[in-house]
Image (cartoon, rainbow, N blue to C red; front, side, top):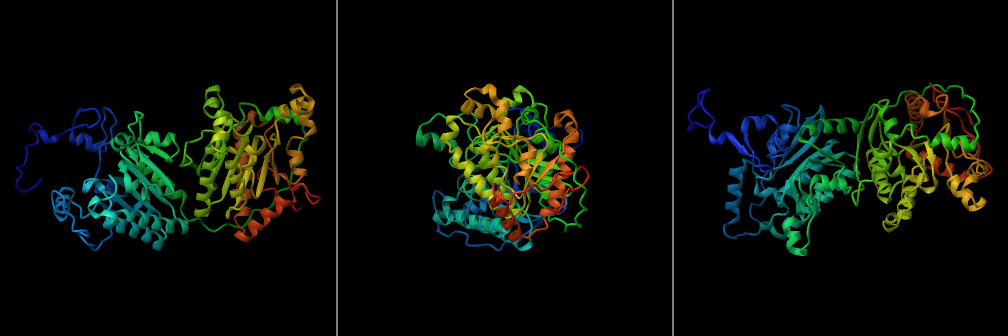
Length: 571
């Protein structure tokens, strides 16, 4: 309220200015009710645009934001004029938005964690990126590196600023370099993509963050839909460039409603907080006796639909934030991954997911990944390495998907690159074989420092049925093939492939899924306690030596993990 606006009586009738028309459904909304609902239409869920200050208020802890002063740069580098002089446009944008530029930067706390925060304002010349925006965003990234803080950016932009010509274009490279330094420093960056985010911003820092979260209903893309239609004369899908479209095509990690953004950011920031020093290693427990089992019985138990899956095991972790997509083509539902907390330690988890019901199994492609599943795994491994987080993989797959579309997208390349990448990761890698381990599709997530094998799990070069069909000329000889290939934990341990066996409840993991998850969790925690004490050089040397001796004369059994202890026995 200004000094020239007369005060209204409490019982006065609402004025036209008190009502807002929803851009999504056209419904008239009472402004105060809309603001209480975070400017989200209660009728159609349309997320109305917010300015930079409103974004900061939405995300930052109350009173925690301290704006970073930015001395002004050149106001009109090209002396540009169209229908109006550029300085006049800048002055009008400042009056309309209340900002000096299209981005506001500073430090804040989100969920109690200190961050560098940058929020764009579409109200300032459409959030376009000129020299000053590039300078401020790069300075925010530099500040994050200097103070060892995460960087959270909220993007809303129509693209590069035409009035600054090629100088604006090169801000994409300037911001890209700043984000590269951030990544090299192993610091978390999160970008919240809001409506709209296009052009030079979408093709630079908006999509370079470690984690990309799109606000529900946001439109994000390189070229706007009108430009696309006028350029290539193509009919576009109805959901083209929406947040949901991006998620389906593997281009963002998550899509969240406005009310869920701050809680999600808080969880991500806590999971990436600097770890406490390791406590002394627990004493080793005596190794139990491994129960011998018929290989065909092991195969049957490993395939039981009620056996706990990766998501079941993750439900037993302290926290888990799933991240989606390979940032190239799609999000493969057969591979799940994200950042999790286990016993106070943050890890990156990647695992095959089959589901339990017929519908779930069809949706998850029966746990058989496409190339994008393995590329998602590689992306998460790279994130783990940059952040200094150990990697945990949970393996349960009949094998990689063998269809023609997988071949077209480079299935062999994806598997080979995943194996190569994991073999040289500069952080600990612990794999747990929880069920089926079919061929290279499983091996891609088994290349590790330690391979823990559940008691009724197996790893095989081919399925018993496939082996029987080729060598016995009948799939009915699958039990004989399983025995001939010596499938099961015992052979994996004796050959030095497995480093430990995790016992299962009597009757198998499916008989008591909660207990099976507890046993896996304890085995993982104990293994991580040991591996996370090793320096990078020792870790890589040990991993290379372990892989090199598989199949050699010096391969020998290591240990069985006992419930309640780390089970580390002398070799």
